[in-house]
Image (cartoon, one colour):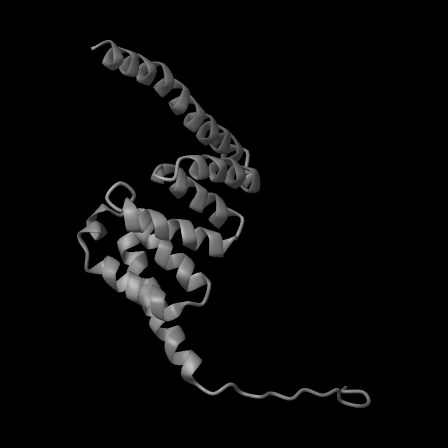
Length: 165
């Protein structure tokens, strides 16, 4: 009985410290985002996510920070983690994962992700206008796939001697 009491007491004493530490990173990152310092925000969110790897809200913010300073590879990675593990809490993560794939030139994978999104129950939970945007992005992926199959034209340019006029 006494051992159980000691365990519960330790849990209640340590829990606020852990929550404070997690919130510290998140609040720090939020501050940097408010001041458009996305690289610093990403560093703060990264520390928080490294320390609390099941905190998918932190991963979502981390992905947006990476997206905001055009680090699409990292944004794709973290949107993928969130869409895989916490799409119910963060339905937009599925859209942003597909979008970052498309930006990086992974058109076939992005097309598949957009198709999955458009046929899932998550579609109704997207922010306003993003369902239509997802349809347009899907069409963009399809067009890019077709265009990439066409042969590349080899244009040759040369300087013209003398006056033109």
